[in-house]
Amino acid sequence: MCSEADPLECHRFSLVSRYFYDQGLDVQHILKDGKLASHDILEKEMIEGYLHSRKHHLPEVDLLFGTYTKEEQRIDAYRLKNKEIGYKPQLQLEEDY
Image (cartoon, helix red, strand yellow):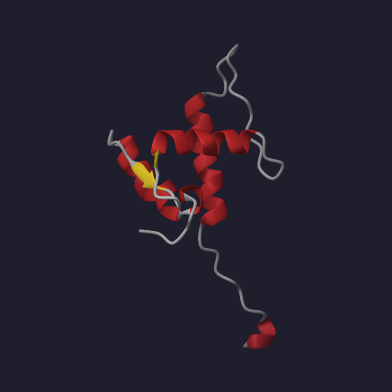
């Protein structure tokens, strides 16, 4: 259970749910309004968001030469998502010591 209203902002989306989804399970996320959203749909939404993001831009899939695949796009989107939502310890300034 998470306190985030949006599953895409939850670390469990990109860690736990991703694992179960990759194992072939039908993962459903409970939205703020009580409705369910499939992991597959949310994953596609995440990838689409990174395709058009100004902050992090994923390259389009190269259909002609196959040098950047949908799976590579998916892996890169998860990497960016984990970087955004992951814990980042704050370094204390030297003067604090």
